[in-house]
Image (cartoon, rainbow, N blue to C red; front, top):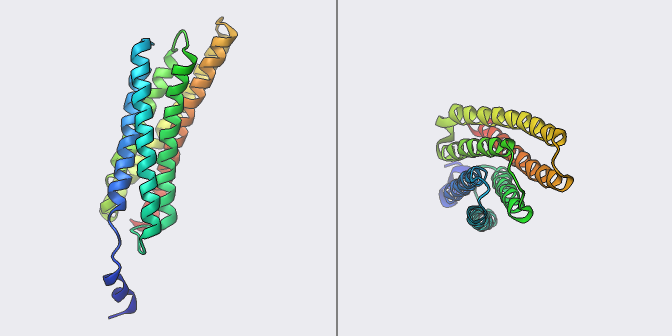
Length: 217
């Protein structure tokens, strides 16, 4: 028996990473669903507060799962993918959850008088992108068979990010053409920026997924 085969028989590739990465993608997906609900809540103050609290709870849960992934990386000798790829995927998904939470918390903190249509459109794009991430992450256990499907999800994520760029530009331009008070304009500008960052972060997750597929599919 070759040394590498013998070594692998005593140090199997730990399968704990797949459920943890899947759980993180589930949290991202749930956070994005709540975000979409937030921006279609008609700015009802009580509903906004409840949804922001729920998103914060998901963000906290995401941090805990990411911490478990780091612990497993430290404790596991042989991993199913390169450590750097597992760490990068966990980091980017966690970052996307964090930015979604920031967007939500700014709505609660700033309490804007209105939420313009661009915010709801961006939140919908983010929700769709997160769903694509979740679908792709749940296919990593069979990466050699599911490579083409994951790449299709990645392409869709990129398309959604490009769509978000267009909505962001149009929405921001609309703010500055409006006659709203400066303070309200600045509040909404920050919120829209966080939403656009969320779409970008989800696209970063897509890039890591593509890297994994190129290496292992």
